[in-house]
Structure formats: structure tokens, C-alpha cells
Amino acid sequence: MHMKIIFNKRPVHVPVPPPTPEDPRIFEDAESSPESDRSTQKHYKLMCNVMVDGKRKNRNSRLTKDIVEACAADGIHLTDAFGPNGEVWNCFKESQSVRVGDVAHMYYGDLKCGTSKHFVGKVLSPYEKCSDDVPLTAFPKVKALWTNHCSARNSACIFCRVDWKEVAMTPEDEYMLKNPGKNGFKVQGTILRIH
View (tube, rainbow, N blue to C red):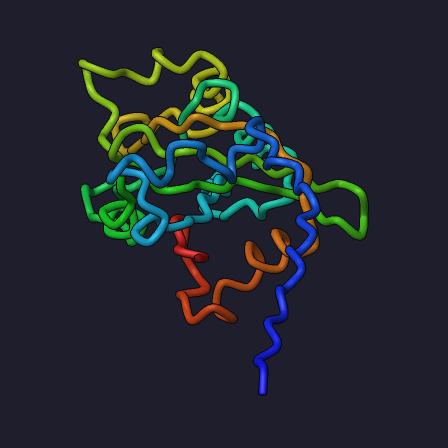
């Protein structure tokens, strides 16, 4: 009795196009840099809806949209962190979990209305308080808006530097941004973990 030897045919490999490097949700050096390790890299939603005259502006107000655009242009995220009497607000505590190399998201609008804008970027610095070393004037686009609406609170601001890129909003992105609770994360706040 002779054994039959059957050779498997080689599987056909279909070439897959590489990811587009312009998309900031993809980092080419993610596997080579410990700072960008995907297993430790977290995604955060950074909100820009500020308090004006005792009322919080919603994410689709004209002022909020303008601040999102200004933050993206200046390469930062900026928010109030301290009350008028020096009390520490929740967003200061939330900011302490954001690390260099994490992925930040800012957005406004709604896909269904055709008004959505989505910015994604790598966090380049930890949050710090605006000070004499880094005054609000260092961010000209944000300063123009902030001083008109929030001038009394300039010293109560914190910021971090982010390498923002505008990306197309996808239904998956919008769902993740609007529903962090579905992934088990906190749903109310200014700086929220989403992934």
C-alpha cells in the first residue's frame, strides 16, 4: 500500500491597500513607540461648550462651534477648570487622566443634518493652566473668542496641545462620541473617555 501525498495549493493573497497615513486615527509608528502603544492608547472626547452668563452653551451653539474650530486651528483644547472662587471643577480632575500619545476627538453637529465636523488628533502635552509662561495670547484664534465671552475666567483655563486633523464623521464615530456610556464610560463631563 502506497501513501498518497497531496500538496495543498497555495492560498491566493489579495493585496490590501495600506491605510491612508493622513488619517490621524491611524499612527504609523504605533507599534514601535511605547508612548503610542495601542494597548495603552486611550480615546477622549474633549468638549468646548463653555459657560456664558451662567448658562452652559450646547455643542451646536454658534459659540461652541467657533471655539472647536479655533482650538483646532491653534492646536489645543482649552476649557475652564476653576470656578470664580478658585473651586476645582470636574474637568480639571478629568484632565488628569489624559496622557501624551492618547487620541483626542472634538466635534459638533449631526450627521443626519449634514452639519457634523470631527477633529481627531494625538495629544502632544499634558493639560496645564494658562499662566505668564503660556498666556492665552499664545493662542490667537481661541483668544479672540475667549476674551469676548469668558474674559473674567482667563486665569481659570487649562489647555493641552493636540495635533488636530479634520476627518470625515462616520456613523461609528458619531455613535462612539455621543454614547460613551455604551462602552462603559462616564456620560457627563467635559473630558470623557470614549474608547
